[in-house]
Length: 146
Image (cartoon, rainbow, N blue to C red; front, side, top):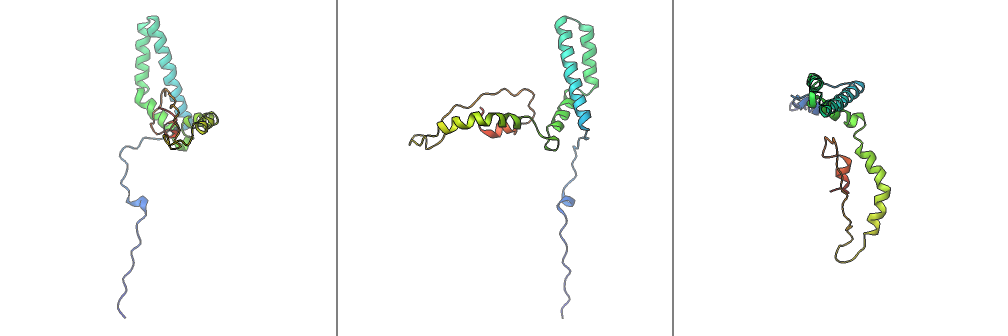
């Protein structure tokens, strides 16, 4: 009887992946919220100081913003707060709120004439996303917005 070859077990997928070079340290949800709130508060105080002409206080606030990590740290905390693990971003809630109002509009516009072949000819909504860090959020995927 010929010798049988041992079948090699395939490696796990997790063992074959290259290590990530840009791993960001994970903050607790409380630390993330605290960092975001602090950044917003400092920005508001800075705006008030600049508007009021208080250049000394404005300089102190700018230094405090820089020492707390600045915009980059704030955006990392925001991204971490919007991760699916933490519940995702609020665009999902907006889409759910708008769904009952938009669904009847698209049904009314779905006439089956030969010119539009059943495709809704309604105008897309316009939206200004303030502070949105992701371009693939629920609003962008909905197809309702320009």
